[in-house]
Image (cartoon, rainbow, N blue to C red; front, side, top):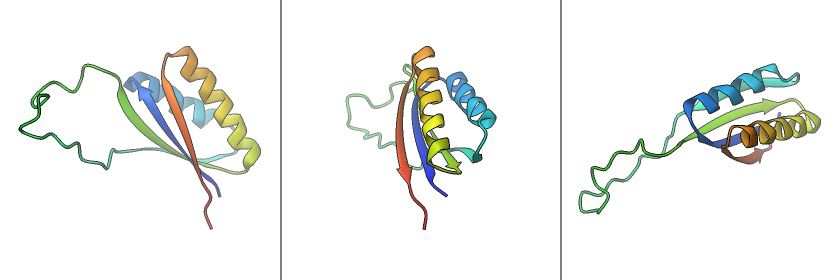
Length: 98
């Protein structure tokens, strides 16, 4: 099944709203928010060393198994509309399995 990876820049509440929306779409096989696996390099000599990281919106990565291309299209359209309404930024990446 195709895997749709969604990168969302927004608040935790925005990510929850997107996940709730995904859970309500017929044809979705699996939805999971995955942790940020990339360690953030904070160089001790950097001018930004020690600065708070909570000033802006967070990055969330969500993986969705979609049953078919039609469902993927519905998911993209619904999330784009919700992200626009919630003032969030969203990116999509499709990965075919097999």
